[in-house]
Length: 116
Image (cartoon, rainbow, N blue to C red; front, side):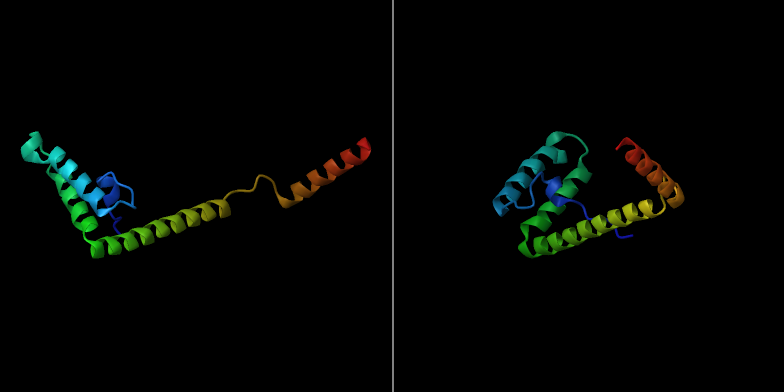
């Protein structure tokens, strides 16, 4: 199973339609917020993700390739969800057998004819 791509837009708290200026502004805001030298905490993993997200989204070629891969991954996830749903339906035990359904239908038909 392929490793899922990180959601760089979510990491920078941006929509997928963000402009280069919005990406730059979000990066600088988050870099100041999470930089280990400025906040005194160990946020090295967070700052690495922020830097990686900025590196990918600020370069038009890398961003186009990332968007394509992200779209394919989301499509594959939707297909996998549909397949799991279909398998669950296929393996579900019917609430009644075909014969029971016919008998029930006939009873309801007879009730309807008596009521008329």
